[in-house]
Each structure stands twice: as C-alpha cells, then as structure tokens.
Length: 184
Picture 1: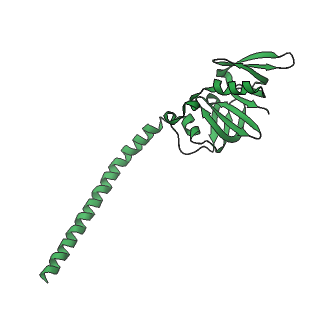
Picture 2 (picture 1 turned 30 degrees about the horizontal axis):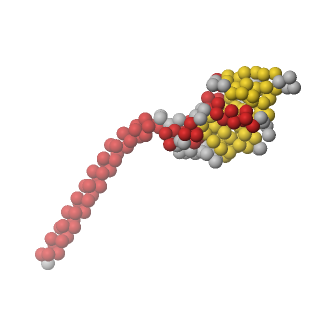
Picture 3 (picture 1 turned 60 degrees about the horizontal axis):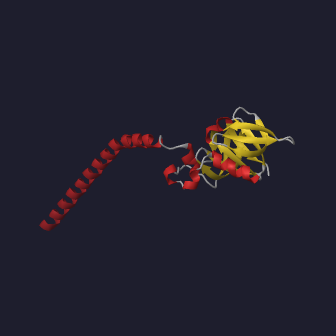
C-alpha cells in the first residue's frame, strides 16, 4: 500500500513538471513569435520579382506590362531583367522594369544565386536570339508606342528595328522597351 502512494505521488509530480515545462515552452514561443515575424519580414525584403518569377516557371501567368497591357501565357524563361512568356502561338520577351503586376505567380521564390549561368543573360541576349531568327516582331515601348518590323542588330543598351520595304531603321533604347512580341 505504501508503494502505491509513492507511485501516485511520483506520477502527480511528473505530470506537474510536464505541465510547467509546457507552460514555459508556450511562453518562450509567444515571446519569440514577434521576433520571428520581424526576421521573416526582414528576410523577405531581399526577395526580388525575378526570383518569384523564376519559381513560377512553366506556370500560366498574366503579366500587366506598361505600355502594352495584359499578356497571358506560360512563363518559359526568366533571365536577368527579363522573362519569356509563350501564349497563343507567340513569344513575348518582357523587361522586368516594364512589369506593373503579375497574376498567378508561385508563392515561392528561387534566389538568383541558384540560377544557372545561362539564366544570368540579360535582355540583350534574348533579343539577339530573336534577331538571329529574322522573325517579324512588334516592339512595344513603355509609353504605348509600337514599332513593327524585324530586329536587325542588338547593341549593349538598344535594339535596331527595321520595317517596310525601304528597311527604315529605328533604334530602340532598352530603357524605353516594354516587351517584344514575336509574330510567327
């Protein structure tokens, strides 16, 4: 009988200690919660639009582009300062600086340090490939103007577009470029 009281007393003591430990953990968690939220906010400010887009590859998205409106398509590639959407038989090379909003992006991000070296190519690299193809395209500017023709050459910070039978050439600065739409 004496043995039963000791066991019951020990069980009550352990239950009491377990309860105290649970309370201490709850208090610790409650105190850390604001700190963790602050850390999360501080770290999230390092996330870029490009890293969110990189995590959204192969997703259908709608991108609102300055001067061009809304473009819907599958996000095929993301590079430094640009992304490629494919939709309705057309490719769209979109400069990130011209993006006003993105709908349908992933909740995650893929930091740029995890990107392949090929992905680090700038918008000039993407436009050079389009120029090599000789495909007709529409070059939309952030102010809403548009130049239809063929990309002839691509410089460090501009693209040369030729149009018409006389091959009238216009130089388009990357800074004013919103999106290039292939018209194949």
